[in-house]
Length: 263
Length: 56
Image (cartoon, rainbow over all chains, first blue to last red; front, side):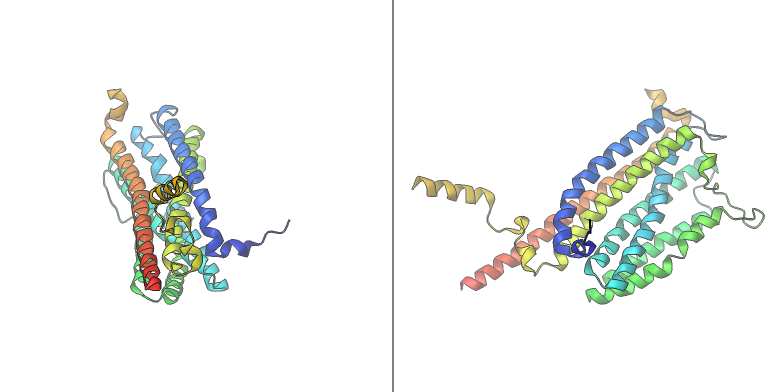
């Protein structure tokens, strides 16, 4: 079967499809996050390696940190697609992803700081991982700021897409900031991010919450993309014909219909 | 129950981390719902004005 991918690159066909998918993503997100946290709080040991119960922050910290980096890659993907094919929807999805990415970065930094206080005795350290992650937050904010600073939509889309592309260099840097090949060259407080070091029981909770955070990201990104579509396509007939834009008040039209049948 | 919430003395750290994440992940969709409502309201207003202009 041949699927016409470009069909859904039209905001007009994307809008109703996204509207149908959003509730499904919400259900999946809530179920996975609650399930993962339940597992993480009730089905796992109180101690991980040398860490006491505070290690449980791992479930939101790792999930949000992974999402922060993953969403950056997703944002760059849409921005690049926009630059190559010049499709309006790609740019809209890129800017919709940016805000959720920012939220995830803030959660990762905040929960990381709290975990750091318990585990390292300090909320913040200019460790390579933490520093590069802070820069990631600034790049996200810079992307959003640049986009809102330029009034012309097409120009702001292109300029911010280029900024996103340049910032992509950060993602491998964040990763290698802790997994550096030579441990004598980088003294990192932050643990190596290696899945092998995590107990399989804890890993289940971590992966399930991460999946939940991913579904959450889908839901909020699609919600935001739909708002952007409405704002940018407001003067088109298809937006004007949407049921949510209809001027007739449902209660009034019902009354009118009733009075008509009576007379 | 209290034992569960105290988390071996680390309760304040664990629950504040969970609380920050929860607060932000509620705030984001709520702000999106509010934004959507205001955008729809705005578009409707322009549409109503256009319709009135056409009538006159």
